[in-house]
Amino acid sequence: MADSGLLLALGQGEQRAWALRRALLRNAEPFATPTTCVAEVWRGGTGPNTNTARALKGVREVAIDSVLARRAGVLLAAIGHDDPVDALLVACAERHNATVVTGDPDVRALAQHAGVACRSLP
Image 1 (cartoon, rainbow, N blue to C red):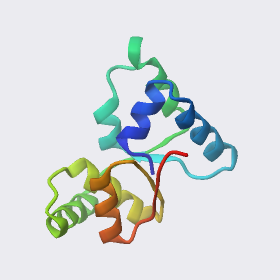
Image 2 (cartoon, rainbow, N blue to C red):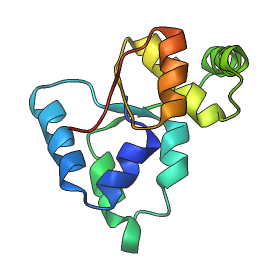
Image 3 (cartoon, helix red, strand yellow):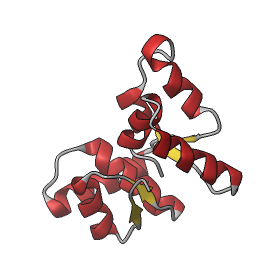
Image 4 (cartoon, helix red, strand yellow):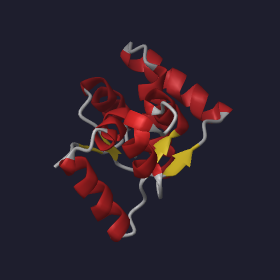
């Protein structure tokens, strides 16, 4: 499950991020991100955002429902964090039994509390 940081790295053309994306898609591993993370990085898909539009092709965008929203709220309360986008990412990963790709220590703390695996960009 990709966090906003990975999407930003893809949008900025970072080779490590693109290599990870290619590897996941080549190995038919699920590559998904919550729609809330898309909202954090999407700026129209043109101009400076062209790479982001390209990066999102083949990525499953997970819609947020009321069950995920409530789970995210519980996670936020449990560790005293206040970013719903981070908590929704972890709640989505938890639901889909996915690993979160992130470098964000707050996301890592949420994931640890939820028992969700994390990995960084290689």
